[in-house]
Amino acid sequence: MPDTASILIVDDEEPIRRLLTRILTDAGYTPLEADTGDQALTMLGPNTIQLILLDLHMPGQVDGEELLFQLRDQGDEIPIIVVSGWVDDETIANQPDCVHAVLKKPIQREHLLKTIDLALNK
Image (cartoon, rainbow, N blue to C red; front, side, top):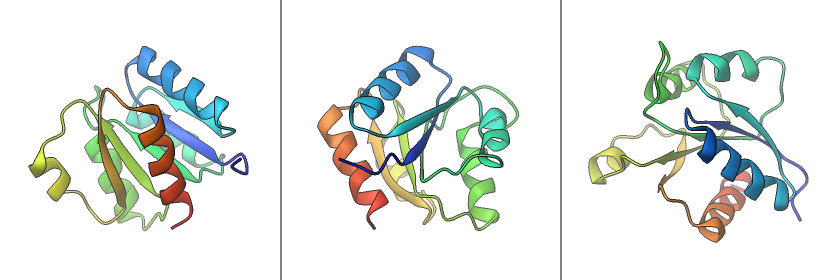
């Protein structure tokens, strides 16, 4: 059982956030939710986050890609797992070093949990 690591879910689709929250809660993690990159940035300040699950394509000034590059440029070392319906080989190849993995929606529960475990224990 994990040590209740806090995981920030950043996705504009509420059903996806609810599903990920349920999976993470059942696995013993502490999920936090943001529906925009802007909201995620404000949540990162006061919260201790061990991992981010990030959708790349979201509305707002700070979409997933912009958030990803801001985190990288700040030197933030929080592992990021990209979770997106728009994943191809180019998307995977062009991710910065801060991206631990890229998972395509729909997400398989066991694959997600294994990927999270690997990222947290890297």
